[in-house]
Length: 303
Picture 1 (cartoon, rainbow, N blue to C red):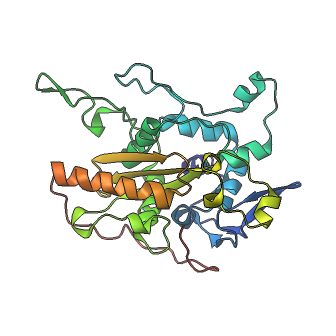
Picture 2: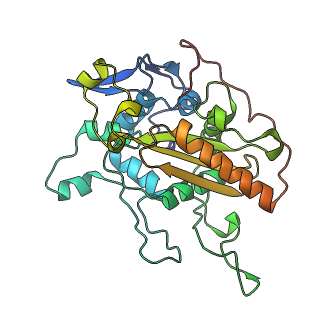
């Protein structure tokens, strides 16, 4: 979403959006996960804090078709051509897709798709591919083997794949936001950072509603963890590591896990710890990626 907005030139990295905890469109209120809001945020800190209102606003400016085009470039909603039968490419919706069903596409649809809700259908493999492409800036494809008969197969290196055509400065900005998610105070997955001797990962938390939450429910103090299990959101986390020389990409989806930070991110950390311990000696942790942007308004808070 961030990269689609930057490419469309509807937002710059330093543009700030004020989050009071919700965005109103007509008589519909779209909520941020943090009820009291995040205050004024730029793009890096909106990624770090997972601010829904920031990305509602950027989605509204960008439009669904440009969002979908960027999602496709990152491996979402397309055939990844992995050597497995029965795989599904999922769905990244567009205005034309909805109209083919005989229904209009509304601005409210665009807003919710700006934070990954709505009609999306995505697999863990697609999410891991997205993380790999974010780390490299290239159209990396997943495969099941690095070599055949002892000979390296094409695709074992990021350089084997074409560039996504996204400016490095834009990719760097989003990567820094993902670094802050895991490694900077206030990030939504700070508790899932790697042990100090294993380097640094960058990641992004997420959750997927499986049932609409009404305004009345929210006013009564709705808490997802108190709902029947089948009504609780799915928990998501994607990551790549090491931050300054990416080798591994991972995605975790915990069905009805409620919170990406609480359920999915710790599992991703455990997977990467196991991989690092088995296959390589990781480098020393790198320095923080560039100057940190000070925030105005609200104190930092994570989820």
